Image (tube, rainbow, N blue to C red):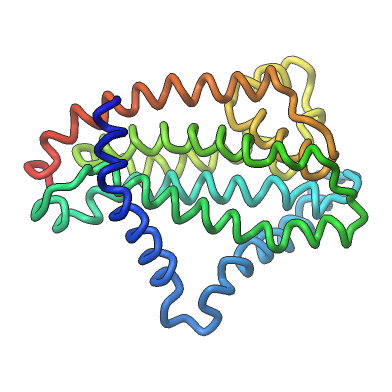
Length: 258
């Protein structure tokens, strides 16, 4: 693990350059260009805000913001995991031609989507204020919550990106997994609509404390529930160790498998 960190540090300029390149090229040639960073989540917000209150007969106060502060970190999670899964295979020519720490590839995907989330806050903060939400000093916990989510995203991304080189069906499995995961996480509904036993079981989903923490610091103006957030952080750290071990073992045969 220490060697991996040293390698990433040594190749940090490559990581930064890759993220910059991805940010510039993601919407290159499109009419709206960089504005798609804001348009995509706003369109999803609009659809969910109209459809789900009708389907669920949801009377959640300030539902658009209840949804929005959870939707953006969820997009960060799903986009990072899905793109990271194919990041090694998608850069096969680069992997086979030159040496660099292969972990740079999933890291660059996560870094790019992290920047997109941060840009999305340009909409979130004004929207909260416009809808009457008072931001408190607890918003300062936001970087910590984001760090916990990023650790969890990295752990999943390392495992999936390494395994996908050998098991190409994993891409389809991940798509299904993400879809199911969405409905096991209180993005479009409050978790307390479920019976007590179901609600208790859902808290074992590491994304539940993370999403709840985003709502706590942004929407409700309070500190995260530390014990729950610590659980998500612990799961992320354990999985990151598993992910690093898996990635390093698979990395040796990347060129052959590709």
